Length: 386
Image 1 (cartoon, one colour):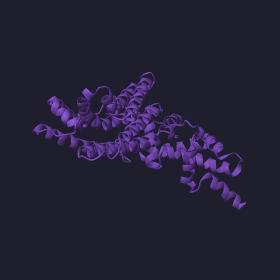
Image 2 (spheres, rainbow, N blue to C red; image 1 turned 180 degrees about the horizontal axis):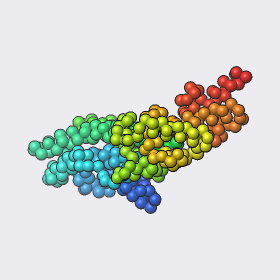
Image 3 (cartoon, rainbow, N blue to C red; image 1 turned 90 degrees about the vertical axis):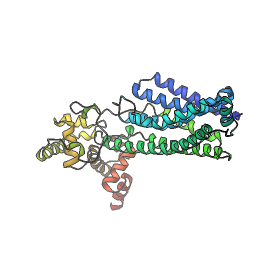
Image 4 (cartoon, rainbow, N blue to C red; image 1 turned 60 degrees about the horizontal axis):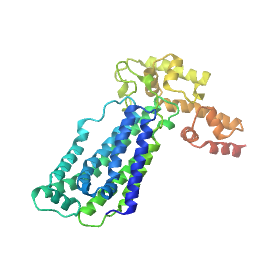
């Protein structure tokens, strides 16, 4: 029998999942994103439901436990797919068959356990003894190996998520002048939490299967899983950027994640003189119209103002000026901010908002990147010189 705290945590986690699913289905988020999140939450609910299943239906425990193997292998794949959708709103299809290979193997091992006679299955999964015969031994080895692969696979997919996140943020900087609300900052915490959870689960299962006491108590696993469920649910409604202005002819509305510099312009017919002309227009628009003061300024808006295609403006910025759209706008913003810091009594926050930043943190980073000091340090240096 499991402890009362385990059963309570199991029920609590399942309640969190049900609340999250209902909230998503009744919300206004993209259906593709909602479906993927519901899949992730459902898989986590199955993992959390093990103690509750043992308490409420002990006779079904020997069937429920083997099902945890494919679920354990599916969670990182489903998370990778869900986070990918949060980065690319135009993604319609789920991941390909190759990503399902390990979960399929887990499903085959699950079916092998279910195929065992009831007494042999209970002996293995309830009493923890290995019955005689080749099949039980083969299943035990396969399950042990797949648990190890689950931890390795989790690390692989979490690395993939962080790699794609880095590319996604570079893409944002080529389209938006304020990116902080779209940067999916919670994803790093998710990756760390998932990696830690899989490490804990793997260590606990391995120690239990080799006859040792569980290194981590089950309550720790359930608490960590509940934390991940809360993190996913709390950040399900964060906004997605509108990048439709970069739509090339015949392609999807949202551009691909940023690739290596220059690769996306290999087929461009834009000449060097064209880039110089566009760069000149951009400089004029910033210096005379002060467009950078618009906190919602985007590549699309700026392109419309100078009557040029967004792809052409992006190429002129990246190849001729060797700067991203985000950094180009930030340079103009901090240039005016420095003048205001020196000649006005307004607070740093007021100045940052006046020049177009919508985040004090972003303003500080941009100012320091351009002038090697923070706005506060700049003001202090002026006082020392006076």
